[in-house]
Image (cartoon, rainbow, N blue to C red; front, side):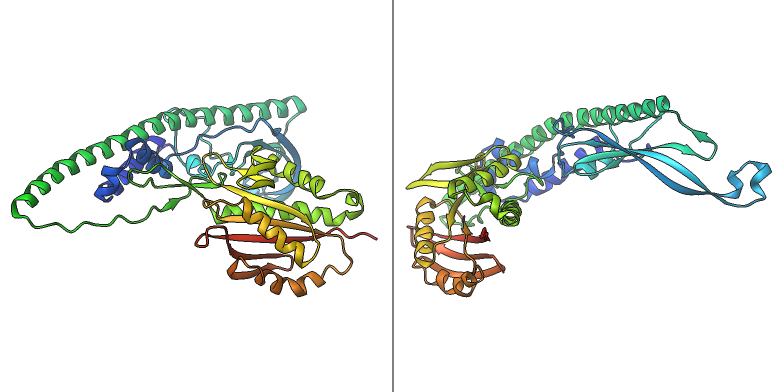
Length: 414
């Protein structure tokens, strides 16, 4: 149990992996990149995120009753001849909330430099957003009173907090060391390349034969973790870092909107007096609760004010437009309106239509042709489900294309 790999072992291994990748990186990338930016790019592929308790959620517990079979050899000698016995038992399951952490399984298997021989962490169940443990409170030959149960629960919570602190101390120390180590590797590689380039330059002048230049490949994106909605792109030589919206995260956002809007459909009478702005505000409140308050309403974007503007730190944005369904003409006007909000750096847009018509299904018998009749429509029309469609459109720049999602919801009430 105490011979497992340590957090320090993990970081020694990832530094060597990063070193191997950096040694194979193109000379243009190394020479042309800011050392800090490039180091952070490699660092975020390997660094562990410290475990954070989620103060916004409460630690909770539940009492569980179950039946356990007691083998004959574990019973008192007087009763052992009677064989196995089913015995009613009780336990308490305690759940401690933590902030979502993609590295939690890796961290749970690594040993901190500080540890206790009385507990290792194996008795805890580590999940992305919770740490849980069980306390047996009643079993064959024992039964805890309330004071004993409370004491054991508090003791278990204390052990979890202590273990998290020990692990976090190592992670924070090793993260700093890892970033500095990667910077040293890049700096050494840059110096070595520069020495070689001087030699190559001198040799080229002497023999007067031009050397073939390698064209650097385009930047490639990597995933930072399970929560952010943006990906860090390897910095282009001589260019600042850029961020792009990841399509998987776009789908996550659309799922949030879809779930909320479908709840509107279940209670249309309660929403009969609400217009576009009020419905927009309900969706906006939900987005803000999930995406840390980065969604804003009626925000200026390029040519006008869009209904919902999801702003990602240092990244691009996702623009939404909410409309009451009004037929083909309004549909095309809405698409053009949305396109007016999209800039060259946008890749996606979303239009949400709320219909208050009895023959809701009629929309979908016509929507394919309506979308494709749009002057900005280019290709890739797709029916994602009965009320969700997407297509590629261009914006003002004829060569710039964006994917627009169309979502439809029926708020008709008698």
